[in-house]
Length: 191
Image 1 (cartoon, rainbow, N blue to C red):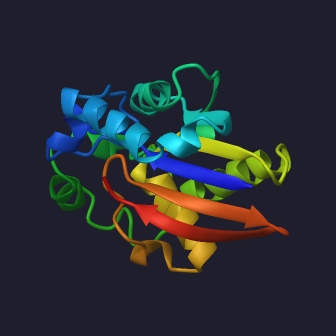
Image 2 (tube, rainbow, N blue to C red):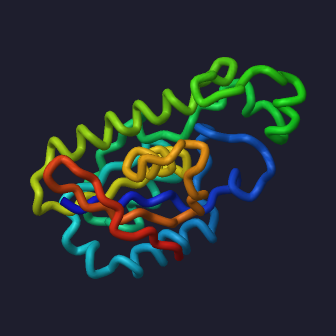
């Protein structure tokens, strides 16, 4: 099985210094272009995609629609970005940390009224495992999500600490092979 795990294209939130997590921003013009560029980069694969999964947030759904316009999209909250809770009310993460200096000291600490990085890791890995269980070895699956969930998947496969995973830019994607109950990152594509 081949998984293509794509981060959505650019949003207004990506251009601003704030904390937005699960805020439902749509793609910017640049974000739509990035999604089209991703489609071009994987054109030979797009025609063989058997199923499409996406976070239920607009930026991911619309990226998936651009890449695979003729496929139905299975939307799932488990593929969402982290819920930063009250941190989304602040202009910067530094402002939040100044107000809540001891709120999040480890990956198991939840943001006030939000979730922890460990929570995100667990729900994303659970969903990816469900996806591979529901498909056969010869299928190609597109999964459109967010930087945090892709970092979680990278951490899971490469056995990195979640805090040491590479930063995933908008419209970047991982090409992953799944065989014999093992995930292997084949490549990390940058547009």
